Length: 329
Image 1 (cartoon, rainbow, N blue to C red):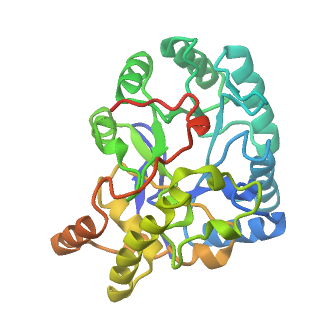
Image 2: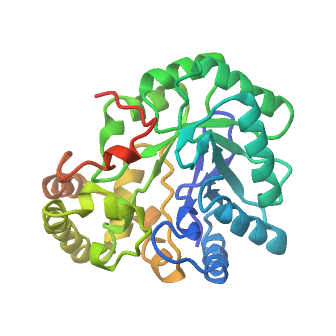
């Protein structure tokens, strides 16, 4: 199997239309096993998924280390994106200073067994520093050959305009799925206008858009979704009821819930490159057919009827999880 290619921003590499998010390898959604994670990466690569996304804060470097082990032992070429700028704490804080970003990037490269990464994101914006100054720091990394391009995460359209005016941004990564639709209010359109790739994270609604809805009762104590309003009563029951209708529609079409949810994202524009994640090959196999699905006007209308914009009950983050996330509506 191979995925059709999409460009990772103007001047960026061509990558598979669906990437891979490695956050779950760090145990954010329950216990993770590194050997199983490596098997999952093997299967992802064999399926043609060649754009992998991680961060220095996922398990305090554990996710990067797993990817680094795969790169060291397999020797295959994939496009890697990682991020910096969040200090987990406590207390949690954001630091986009040149010194901190350089230190964290160098640590990330060491864990990844790489001399450079193709894409380096500011994980969250530090509002004590003008974004233009942050971009100048990132440009210095490009000039030194440490990164090929930079990206921004969880930002508003006005921040992208300011950053892009200093040096072209390669990608913007914000949450986007059938239940998180804020980027439709200008950000996806602006990325298209500027030639910037839009990379939706959590495109499968943090596990809700699978063959069964994840049950909060079965979540591990450290699972960050336990504090998420969408997974708490009465919101959770309302969200399950809505998604069950979409799940039945996917089944009637002969596909999986996850594959149809990703196909919907891919249908929103050829500059969108979603990065679903999973800890197992079993769940990976649920969405490998996403790029082969073509939606008709009737499909689009039915999906909009079942899961209209704003259907989700509850905010996508708890208040304490919103630090430095830019709101613009």
